[in-house]
View 1 (cartoon, helix red, strand yellow):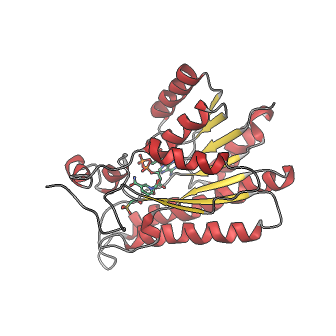
View 2 (cartoon, rainbow, N blue to C red; view 1 turned 60 degrees about the vertical axis):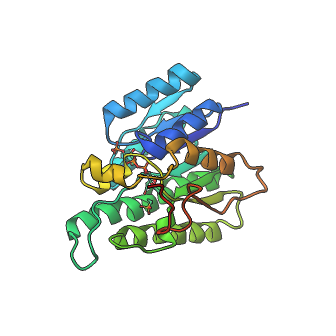
Length: 254
Ligand code: NDP
Ligand code: 8X3
């Protein structure tokens, strides 16, 4: 049987890297995207060494539409028929109040978390429809369900991911293509380091006193959705640490 192909954006770190591992372990051909070439090379090596997985590095900035178009067009024939698109690349910068934050930083966040996810979907899904098979798995967030202090723009972006997922599912309802929105809570990755502009101490504080999830935990959920029988569509999953209850309520041991 022909191996399935998954394309994961933001596979150089955290949740994306966890997904790359999980799909590789399960015999997929894995296309890994990100901007950091060194980290992508490291992921490729891990997938090939540990899982003997066929791995294709496709570096581009998801916000750069021309780069995305060229990268997708550059895929060799044997890699073009993408079965699963994991729209994972995303970030937030800062914890500023909505009336005080930096509009240029928020442009980066909105361009990455909403516009790039939409562009990837727009470019990859027509091929899925043509082939009569495919699955789009968006990485949303618990932040899309609950606004929290200093999170307004990020929360708005992840609420948009929910709406883009729901809308796509509606638009594809008469096709075999499935659409899933995974909404993680606290996951310890490089996310908070980026959010706190490189301040590792501030990032570590986010996970103090609680056992957070990690990228591999989220990958389990992503893969569960991907591996579900074809007649079954996991539309949305909210997944968080046991000691987290909402976007703002968590129990932390002193
Ligand atoms: P990481 O910072 O560890 O990973 C983010 C990934 O996104 C990196 O691989 C990075 O790659 C990539 N990325 C960022 N910007 C771009 C870009 N412009 N073009 C291409 N790739 C890009 O964080 P996470 O793994 O935690 O984040 C993954 C997703 O999970 C995000 O969408 C995030 O919002 C979401 N999420 C995270 C949660 C958490 O608590 N950690 C909870 C809920 C959702 P590179 O640097 O190589 O470009
Ligand atoms: C990231 C998790 O808690 O910052 O999506 O909203 S949180």
